[in-house]
Length: 519
Image (cartoon, rainbow, N blue to C red; front, side, top):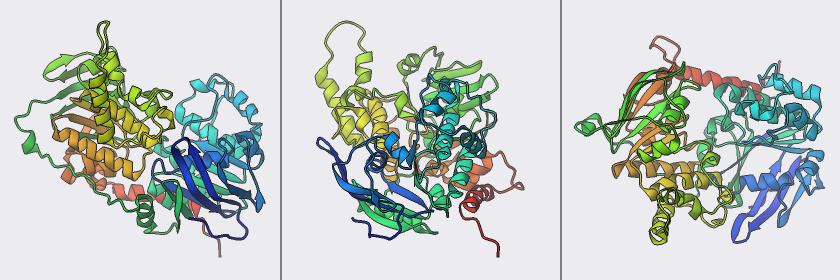
C-alpha cells in the first residue's frame, strides 16, 4: 500500500523494501507523519516495524524506496547522520555503554547537559549522579536516561520503539505525559507499543504494517482499536483459549508444587500456595510486591530466608538454576535476552538442554534431538527463515524459542514471568493456546502477567500478592479485571473502585496528550 501524498508532511517514507537473504523484512512499507502529531506504528511481531525504524534512523540501508524530511530527500548513512538530520530513536533496550558513566554517554551524542537535566526532571528522575557508571543504574532508570538524552537534542522526529514495554507503571505514566506534550508544535513522535491503552491515550493516527507492507492508516478515536487489530491480523480469526479446570477437577490430584510460608528478607512475608498437574495458576501483583523474588527463588537464582518448597511431594532447596531445572522447574523470563544465545541458530538454542544433560563423554543422539527440535518448532509455529541466528528473529519468535526449548526437552512444571510482554496479539494468542495445551497434557504452569486481561484467557485460577503476602485467590470465572485490580490494590469494597483508578491513570495521560485550550 502506498500512503497518499499529503502536503506539508514532516516525514514521508514510500515503498521501503529490505531483505536479508531469503528473509523479506519489508516488502513495500510506507509512512507519512505530519508535523505536531503523535503517530503510532503498529503491527504484529515480525511485521517490519523495527526494520523500518532502523532504516529511518540510518542503522540499516533499504534495498529500495524513498525517504524525505520536510519535503527534501533524505538518506541517513548512520544513526549519527540521522541524528544530525533531526531523527532520533529510543529502543526498549537502552543504547548506553554500561562501562562508561552517564556524563560520558551524554558526551558521545553531544547532548546539551541543561536540556538533559530538564527532561530528566520532567520524567520523574531527580538527583541522578552523572558520574555513576551506567551498569550501576537500575534498568528502568537507564531507559528514562536514554529518552531524556533523545529529547534534549530536540529532534524533528522522535521514534520510541517499545520504550514503555518494560517500565513500571509510574514511569510509563510520566513518559506518556511527556509524549503528549510534544503534540501541536513543529516536531512529531512515532510511537510503537503493543498496549492499546497507550495508543489510545497519546496517538493521533496509526499506520499498520502486516508482513512487511503498509495495510492501512487509522485515525485513533474511541473504538478504533478493533479496526487496528483487524488490520494487524488480516484474515486470521482470533480464537482465544479459555480456562476450564475447576476446584472439583483438582480434588484428589497430588500437587506438583507446594510453597509454604515462603519469606525473602522484606519482600516476601509468608507466601503459600499449591500448583497441581494440568493447571495454569496465575499470579497478579502490582510493581514491586514480591513477585520477582518469588519467581527468582522458584527458578533457583535466589534463596529464601524462610519457608518450604516441595516438588512432587519432596522438599527442595536450590543453590543454582540448574538445581531447579533438575527438579523439573523450568523458567521462561520476560527478557528473552537472558535465555538466548543470540548469535547461535534456532536449532542450537532449542537443543541446549540436550547438551547440558550429557553426563559422560560420548555422542549426542542427534536423531532424537532433531526430531524433538522440529516438533517444538512446528508446535509453536516459529518463523525459521532466519534460522542461522536467533537474533534475527522478531521479539515474539525469540520468546517462542525460549519456550520451545522446554517443549522439546519435556516439561513437568513451567514458571512463566510475564512471557508475553512486548509481544503482538497473534503471538500472544499462540502462547496462550500452547500453555493450555501443555496443561491438558499434564504439565503445571505458574504464570505472572502484568496484563490482567490475560488471566481469564489462560488461567484456571489466580493468586494475588500485595506487600509480599497472598491477599486473595480467585477462580478464573471470577477473575475479571475490576476484581483483580481491587485485590491487587488491597482495596475494600467501599474504597475507590479499581476501574476508576485505571480510568484516572489513562485520563491523566490523555489530558497531557490533548490539552484543552482556554476559551
